[in-house]
Length: 370
Image 1 (cartoon, rainbow, N blue to C red):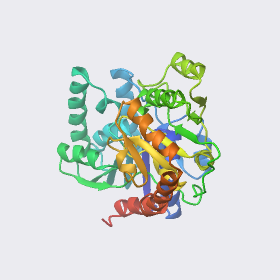
Image 2 (image 1 turned 180 degrees about the horizontal axis):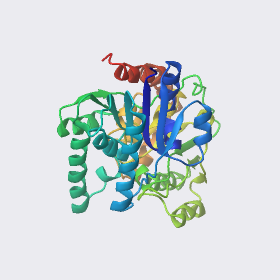
Image 3 (image 1 turned 30 degrees about the horizontal axis):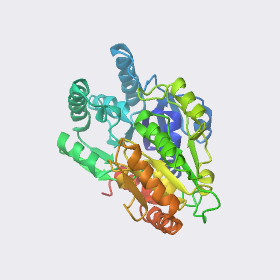
Image 4 (image 1 turned 90 degrees about the vertical axis):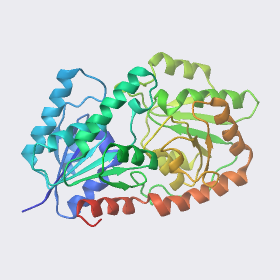
């Protein structure tokens, strides 16, 4: 009988950008591959690859108790219907609801990818603290069953999971990158170009990036600052249209929409910036390393784990535009430092971030070789 593997993830585009190589490898190994996710316009693409797609009504923002119960019910029914040998849950709601639902079913191996502990672990205040206690309790129920494995991307998240329950944990640094597609090229230093590419969320440090660009340009330093990405209306931290229009109007940063040619963009850049407040292990920094570009990012979980500080990139203080500007300016003014960091980043990518190695590590978990 053909073994089945089921991926449960919040939305199809995220699966394609972060987990699709796992599904492709599973097909090559003879698995029947199912994916349950929120559907945008990618269903036909996934089905043409040979995946069996199940639609979920899974909102990434709060929908009320009725909506959440519906999401849980749908995940439960898909698990029961497919009865996979391996179920891999990715992102917060699939991990929580899938883990809890699995406890009522005879699922084989359960793998949970916790790629950053999300908005609720960043937000401050009493309400956020109470929500974190509740979420940790849900994680304990979801994760602490039989035949389970948790995959985390940085040591801080590993420590949090360890504090929740005693469970098998694998630390895999990110979702990997195709080193052939994201290839190293010499930088063009005729005019320095700084790029930030992300979902346009406050938590990614967009406002700090814009303010840092303003600080640097007001010194008379002639540099291009670019921002790429879409707003994410389902995320509470999303920039509003008015905020985005103000950034465009102020003119310190040139704003572009979503682009899928990130390799080409980074190869034409000199410095890649991500001043995020917290991450799992940001793919954009892995891609920057693979392209041989120096990085400036924040000294927070996930971001600091994607670089080798002072070797492949520089760290700045979180939520601090002045610190960010200082580190960006240091790279702008020192081409030797930029290039040495870029070359070291490429070596780091080959050592740690090669998609082939990341896929192999996952299949060692799936097939009981760890």
